[in-house]
Every structure is written in C-alpha cells, then in structure tokens.
Image (cartoon, rainbow, N blue to C red; front, side, top):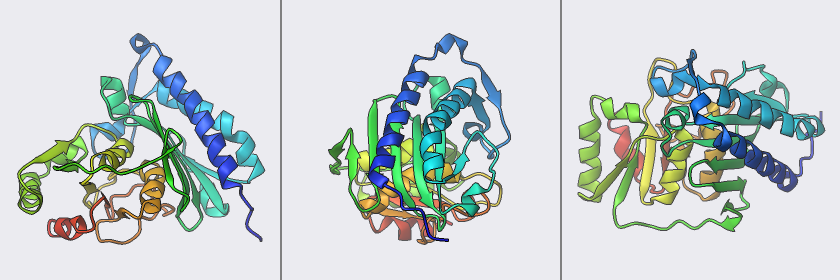
Length: 282
C-alpha cells in the first residue's frame, strides 16, 4: 500500500496550535484543586505520579488532533493511555506526552512541558513540537527544515562553562561523583549541573546551555524514560546535527515494542566527544 502523503508544514501548524490550547488549560488549572495519584510506570517517583491535569491535557490534545489523525490515517501513542499498537500498523503515528515532568509540575518548579511528535513506522521523528510551560517558549522542528523557538530560527549560544543535565534520580547513581569528575577533567572545573526537570526539558536545556549533555545509562528494570519522552526532542537534535543516540552511539529507536527506553539508554549532547566519555561508565 502506498504511503499517505502528509503535508508536514500544515500538520506541524495544527500540532502547535493545539499545544497552545493545552498549555492554557494546564497553566490556568486551579492549583488548590490539584490531586496526585500513583501509576504503574518506571522505577522512580518522577515516572510514577500522574494528575487529573495530565489526563485533561491529553483529552484536549486528542480531541483537537482527531481531524488530522483521520485525515492522514495516523496511529497514536500517548503517555496516559494503553498502547493500542496502531503505531505498528500505520505508516506514521503521533507520539504525545500531555505533561512531561509531572513531578516539577506538582512542585511548581521549572522543568515541565508538552511534547508531541510525528514518527514514521521506522522510528524516525519527522515533526517535533515542545512547549515549555514555565517560560512559555514553543520549540518546533520539521525534519531537515530547521529548528524554531517561538517561530524564530533557533541559534545555539555557547557558554564558557559546561552543563551536565540529569534526571534527579541520577544524583544517587553510585558512580555519579566519578562521572562528574571525568567531565571536570575534560571540560574544566566550572561545571554546572541541572537535575530537576523532566526528560523533554532536559533535552531543551542542553540546547539552551551549550556546551552540554544529558544522558541516561542502560538498566535492566523498566524505566529510562519512554518513547514519548524523546520523540519530539530527537527531531530537534537531529535537525541541528547534534548527538541524539542511545548510550552506545546507535540511533534512538522510537518505534520499538517496549515503550520504555531502559535497555539501551539515551545520550543527547551538543558535543561530539561526550559519548566516548560516558561509555566508560556503562
């Protein structure tokens, strides 16, 4: 069967517009009404909490996107719904994280966002849209067509110091201090550490704080983030020709059977030599 011809520019516009509506819903939700529930997910608190706002955001996004889903015969993969495997049957699927960084959202700190990507059956992100819900910045990319921040071409500005971005749970890694020391040895004493955001904003913070990198090592237990945590940001990084791989330097698999990414880990970097450094600690 011939692949559906998708107007990526118009589809990206539709995704951006519905993302703005979901952002308004999330930002205007009365914080005093916020209730927190637990769900079966990864092996740390950040992956195990969910709120009614996550579900409301997802419902709004799916409702707003149902027209393009039908028009282009898209599969769908979302964080707060059971994987219906439509991503294996369709040529393309929308990958939706209605609130990435639910824990920062609950804490009302920076680090939470909305993330939507269009991914093909082979596992390549063709569109990436990310809304930073704290700074109100909207990032988007169409594969090989540039990266934009609030519709202005994105330019990487380099700092004099190196920034390491981690999930907060990584601070308890038994070799954390050794890893940090290795980066200090290579990049100098003036190293900044950011470790409080969700995976999506962690990737954005790498872009915004170059030179920088964000990585998660492989592990045996389910966790390590999920496909929806990396789909949109991988589109931005690949379009900018930056490092976005698993822990071994292979392309991130965005349409594997298991939605968790723990088997091979991830590595995002503005620098080409950080991967070899981190491999020593796997």
